[in-house]
Each structure stands twice: as C-alpha cells, then as structure tokens.
Image 1 (spheres, rainbow, N blue to C red):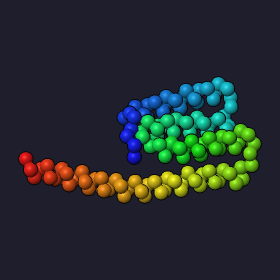
Image 2 (image 1 turned 90 degrees about the vertical axis):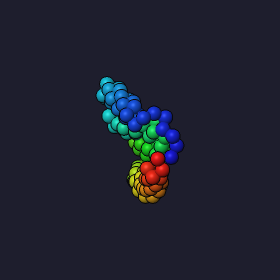
Image 3 (image 1 turned 90 degrees about the horizontal axis):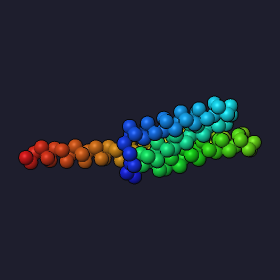
Image 4 (image 1 turned 180 degrees about the vertical axis):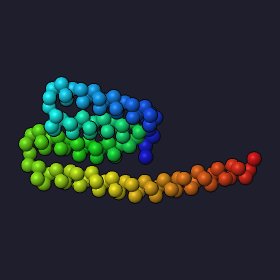
Length: 121
C-alpha cells in the first residue's frame, strides 16, 4: 500500500465536505439520477486517493463513473451494470483477503519488534 497523503481524519473531512457540496449542487440542479452516482463516487475515490489506496480509487471511479455514463448516455445497461458491480465486489473480496494476510504479517513483525525492545533495555 502506498503512503497516505494525509491522515484518515483529514481525508474523511475533505471527502465529506466534497460530498455535501456535490449534494448541494445536485439538489439545486434537480438532477438526482444519475448524478447521485458521481456525488457518492467522487468523494469516495478522493478519500481513497488521499489515504494512498490508488487501486481502490481506480475501481471506485470505474464503477461509479461507469454507472453514470451508462445511464446518462442511455447505453444498454442489462449487461454492463451487473458487470460493473460484480467487478467492484470481486475486487473488494480479493483485496480483503490479500490485505488481511499482509496485515497479520506486519502485526506479527511489530509485536516481535516490541518484544525485542522490551527484552533489551
């Protein structure tokens, strides 16, 4: 995983602010569908980018912008939308399994390092 550009707290604050501003613009223009897909997807992708999760950002943008484009330009969605959502879901499942294995290894290394520091004053 790449280094985060900012803290989780700041990334969340920036993405929530972008979400609220986008929601205000969407409600003012009265274009709820499919604009809500951009209102949700872009702040989510921005948060992932700020936290250094570039692959997650790419998948989020692919799914949310894909849905927006499909609906906005009246593209046949009977096959495309399920494919977009399936790609997003499969990616999340694989990411969780891969990250959990990496996370356990990193936690074990941290614990071992702390134990070594405690044993050698």
